[in-house]
Length: 340
Image 1 (tube, helix red, strand yellow):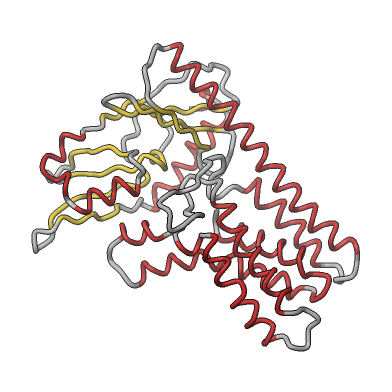
Image 2: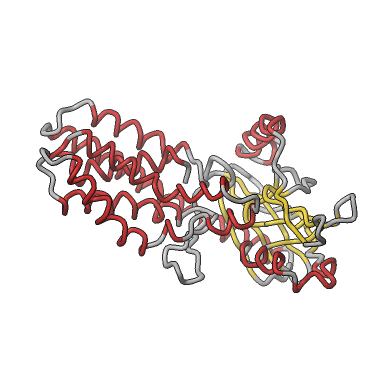
């Protein structure tokens, strides 16, 4: 999830565990604990290889092992920093562990996937919530701020903090139910159209859980479709994207290609670029747009040779000018097909 959400979750956890003893310091250090796992993005400052940075994100720092190893260390440091507080080393360790651990647990519900069981090469990803979801974060943040307005021994402080946790957890449960329901809609539409497929992956579109997206693997292509809970017509129109794996030719054994295939968990297509190079498209995060004729993917790597002849992959960034039109397009599509 986004940094603000992780801060709010960590702060609420800190308040739950130690708020009555140390007040807002529990919220502060819970918030800090909630952001620590995402410091793995700092890798980008030390390497020009974006693939390496993407590989390491949500790796070791998001694992159970990391939480178990570093919570006692952080707890010991805080117990030395706040010697006059009632909290013991065990108290601080408990706060830091749950602040660290709830971070990857929350991330596991998103699309990217989290190596919770690192070093095992397995990513936990339920794909039922987008990395930024205002309906999850705003109520959570509101009740946390309200709780902070009361003194630490006031029962209303605990009440409001727990209320925020219950509401956010309840919303998360609803997203799982919506995923189950929309999966059935996609499956039925595929069956009605006599489309033979190997696998379906569904996920919510950006910033909401009303408009859902499906990636469908067929023999030679991937199909992508969208369904809004406000759509009156459940007959979904799918856009086809050829796998084009033949474009790799002799590049299939290149190390960077194997790394990209592993990173995308096999959900990728290839596309010919204008300069005779190739685009490697990561399907997991969908397209830069909602309309059926959209062709550019959110995560796309351009494959080319450097001066030394080594095959490299450069991630193409989106143009900030495209964001506003995309958000308008998304907003319209959320309310149903007729809005587009």
